[in-house]
Amino acid sequence: MKESDTEAPSVCAGCKATLTRRERERRLFVCPRCGHHDRIGANTRLTQLLDPDSFRELDAKVRSRDVLEFPDTPSYGARLAAAETATGHSEAVVTGLGAIGGTAVAIGVFDFRFMGGSMGSAVGERLARVIDRARTKRLPLVLVTASGGARMQEGMYSLMQMAKLAGVLGRLREAGVPYVSVMTDPTTGGVAASVALLGDVNLAEPGALVGFAGPRVIATTPGEELPADFQRSEFLFAHGMIDQVVERRHLRSTLTRVLTMLRGPRAQSARRR
Amino acid sequence: MARTYLDFERPLAALDARIETLARGGDTAEQRRTEAERRRLARRVAAGLTAWQRVQLARHVDRPQTLEYVEGFCDDFFELHGDRAFRDDPAVVAGVGKTPQGPLVIVGHQRGHGTRDRVRRSFGMASPEGYRKAVRAFELAERLGMPVVTFVDTQGAYPGVGAEERGLAESIARSLQTMATLRVPIVTVVIGEGGSGGALALGLADRVLMQEYACYSVISPEGAAGILYHNQGRKDVARAAEALRLTAQDLLRAALVDELVPEPMGGAHRRPARAIAKVSERVRWHLHDLAGQRVRDLLGKRHARYREIGAHTT
Ligand SMILES: [Zn+2]
Image (cartoon, rainbow over all chains, first blue to last red; front, side, top):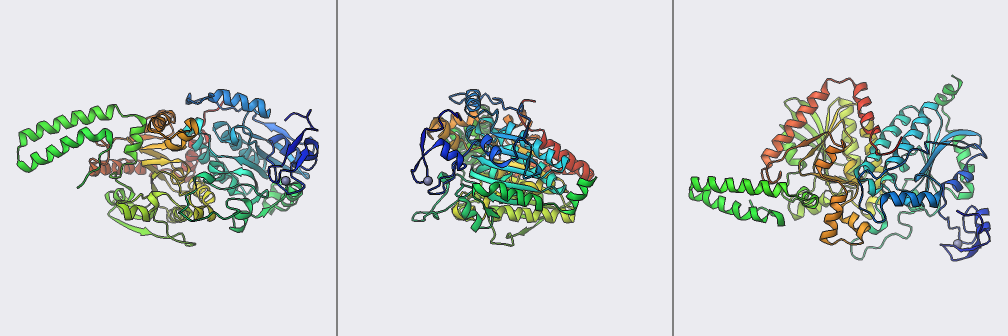
């Protein structure tokens, strides 16, 4: 995002209120009138959540390639290049090590602007590596998801990333290292059905779309109406899938709190060693 | 038995009818000649199949399904029902099978035969309860030290309001994680359509076999055509099917599956008994091959198998 147009007005997607970019940024891109949480990029998210200057990005060189020579227009290669220009990231997830409120963490943050946060080989590999890093260094894992699911352009390579992540998360679990999942708008498909809903603690931002099937393919019988908050975080909270719905302005403090508390005797003895 | 013929199978239909008439009439010489002609034609049809035609074969209503493979594979099968939380999902079959080589746990999608059965089973599209029943069966297998065999045959998980309400995404993720860390051997056979996450949720295994005319895709050709060409016309769907590289041959070439199980000429639905025997034989072989392995090695290899999948740089 360019910083030059901070005075440029922009309209809230929730209530159509007009704010300048500077005001929106000051309010963490949450509308002061209606509370609508805008989608934000990975850099903005990392800045909001992590202790200043604590982030060290890993595996930025892990990139996707057009392995199927997929007949898309524009081509997959062109789409990757355009996404990189738009976001400043070389893939749809940014991973690394950092600290939240003094607790060192392994963290991965999706950027929905990068091809809809879709998961291909590179996203799967970056996540697998940061999860392995969390396990070997015994650092709590934090993943902030925003994804439409598996990336079509890599076909079955994309789908298999779900299986890969199930494996590395399984090992993290067996090692007794905690994982906090933060679901943001939107988290659906293969990312929801692999990493996002498997947190030891599942958090979500208000109003975030979270589900498996995209809302357009949900089968309804004639006359059946979807619940008003269908597939929104409040709906998932009510149905027992999410521990807490957390407003963005409280996200950092909530993570700080829960991360200091998710330290069993195993984690403490591991630290002493 | 009434048979269903797809468009590109039509030329075979006439010969099949003729063979049946000749068989009744007892004209063996003419029957043999017609059967030879049928084989030649079937081979020509098979050789020229497009990806989209293969998808149609994978979805064929007459194709054998999980319960038929179970019957062929086991002397006895004790079916388990219910997720112990909400209900039984008939789109997924789970149970304990008795075989000459010992007991095992079998789980698979069941699309159903005939309209009533298919509707009851949501055409094999599983709800959370189906995946949770599967997890229940996997954990039973682990506790009792029995190997697991799964059959994948679904266009995808059930995209319904209730399924979402009860945590479809979580149930798929949980099934994957359970299979990834399960301390007994797992063999999966893709016997029809492998439709994205809802298929993979039962397909994380030490060995993944695919029948010759099965397919396996990250998204349905119809869905991909909608995104790629904003169209779901026949031509566009066929183009999308080609692009997705979803045939058994494609997946074997990419080393995403371990083995292609040959089908009778024309497909498993033409000679179900032969298809079932072949799958049984290969599953038995792989179970035997995995049986001697130490749990540590088994889990290490399963982990590495998936950990290494990816078409990324560095
Ligand atoms: Zn607003």
